[in-house]
Amino acid sequence: MFGIRYYSAMTQVVIVGFVCFLCPGMFNAVNGLGAGGQMNATASNNANTALYSTFVVFGVLGGAIVNLCGVRYTIFGSGFMYALYSGSYLFLNHHPTNSSFTIAAGALLGVGAGILWAAQGMIMVSYPREEEKAKYIAVFWVIFNLGGMIGGILPFAINYNTTQTQNSDGVYIAFVVLECLGAFLGLALAPPSKVTRSDGSSVVLVKYTNVGREAIEIVKLFMNPTILGLLPMCFTSNFFYTYQFNHLNAALFNMRSRGFNNMFYWGFQMVGAYLISILLDAKRFSRRKRGLIAFTLVFVFFNALWGGTLGVYLKHPAGLPEDDRMDFKESKRVAGYIILYLLCGVGDALYQSLAYWIIGALSNDNQKLSRYAGFYKGMQSFGAAIAWQLDVKVVPRNQLIANWVLIVASAPFMLYVISTIKEHSEDVKAADSSEIEYDEKAVAAADASRAA
Image (cartoon, rainbow, N blue to C red):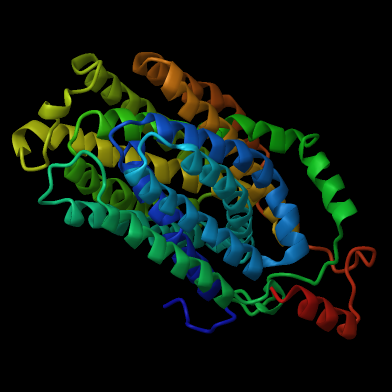
């Protein structure tokens, strides 16, 4: 259906999807358990704050690093940071009062994750043709969240017959092994200069860059009105994870049921990504109209979600006592809560897919889009860093209010950016000889030196 040529754009998106299946997907599974699978959320909250604090910086810088170093080795090195982070929880299992290693691993993961997601974003939104971008986003999102779903199965199966309040060593060991495999899979990616789209066109004309130019381009991001209009959307896009994982999942369910719930949370993300892709690639509407319709659906859906979440909070403002937390087998008691939690997963996929589609609609230039994707992930991480630290210091009620207010406040800015979307993005101009070099020997030398 999509073709299986190694150098095709779809093949490359599938490969990066499986990298994220094994690395960020397993990370999502750990975080989705609430408290990183531990009983006490303090170490996890502090580690996530450190993670997203460095992610802010290296998310913004990530696009430049990928443009300078290429995709293969940047993803390869970044993948091992995920394994280190999961391994730090194995250490925490045996040294529960010493969270310094976990916090340091979180900070290092922020460096790797910022670079990995900039590379991933560039591949996902610059490789496809304009009329296929939502489909490619959906393909990636399905594969990526399949990792989170399988990552939910692991702790559910391993912890099924236990009554302990933290993950067993076997869960974290499994995550470390899978994340190392994901890092090595990054080496299977093809150099962008060799990748072709479904119509046979190249995804990139060879453009040369350097540190000075990348620094200037990053500064320009913060002076671009359209990119600045994306800031509230970026900031909000992962802010809600903390509340959902810690106060809908961890505070209400026992350990094995958290893994059970995550299978649905990440599994239904695949459904959400597929459904919104149909709308965002619908040819009967103009590009801008598709964006406006999708925005309306996402905005209404999220307000309904937070309305339901408010209802749960009013019923259980302090969560449930440890010995009374719900088990998935209590079908009559848990059904409504699990449905709300899986709908949160659908909402996440809808929001992220729309955000990436908006970014992809701004340009077809892979270097520019790598910077845009890095900016998105960096500012997303800025919001997440604040959210994880708020969980340490702010009561759940105020966190819920903050989440809801942010969704509403980001709406007019998203509408502004969508209103600027044109029917066709600008293409890389072959005539710009100051940026594009056609010397075949220079191209070959650059490919050999970058090897990515």
